[in-house]
Length: 323
Image (cartoon, rainbow, N blue to C red; front, side, top):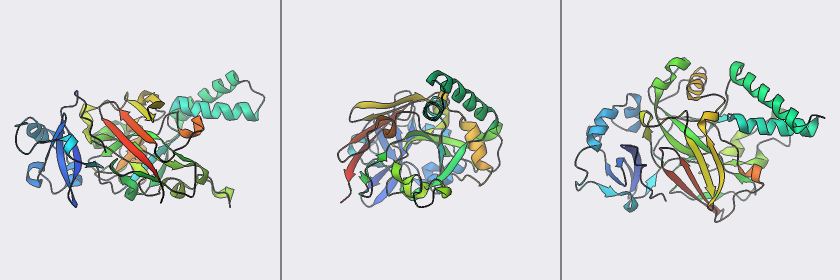
């Protein structure tokens, strides 16, 4: 359960918290939050608000009486996922240095090139891909999106469950075949996501010609922890945010989104060419180097993952073995 405050440089954000058997939308300021009614939101629900977000309206609410009786300490509530996406899109192989390392290792192992020659060739390949290629997307199940209040249950059918901390774009206005120049107009905000992957299920063993099996590898219950906050896009520099994951206090991932091969406008534009992106949808931007496959260490019962991204707070996910 996350009890960390909203970063001090962020004026306010949205969150969802548990109130008995229901989940309520709230505005967060610092280490406190207060529920928001539909009248205060100016919309029937969160996704309706994100379709045409009026952040000034919420800013005025945030600047109101912070000592009022409706405000509660974050430590006294249980936050859950701050979004309710209808679609979940994930981006693969999108951090330049990470992909260069992977490609260079393959070239070194399978050719007579030196490591230096392999890195130079891999860098040229990635620069060409960024200039002339397209992002690589696959889709996940929205039902896998949970808050970090839900322990991550590690399915017993594998021992190689991996982490992938990512900056997640929250779609605002519907986006269909938008240009790169207009893409950011359709981004309502950002949140943190951890794209859990079962490595030995990624490639089909019974028919290798089929290729990757992202359904089985990425869509077990709770495999996309999100949150704790939905931060308005104007408060976050998505082009240079630090993505950092610690496993039991040890830093495993630590990189900037400035290393993305395809930046956020390119991702939103490309994803929107096939299917309309809807208010509240999540678009994950890719994961930097440092996952379990790199460290040859995968998730185990009792592990604690602490993920943070500049301006978005901290997500704490606890792992438990399947019953």
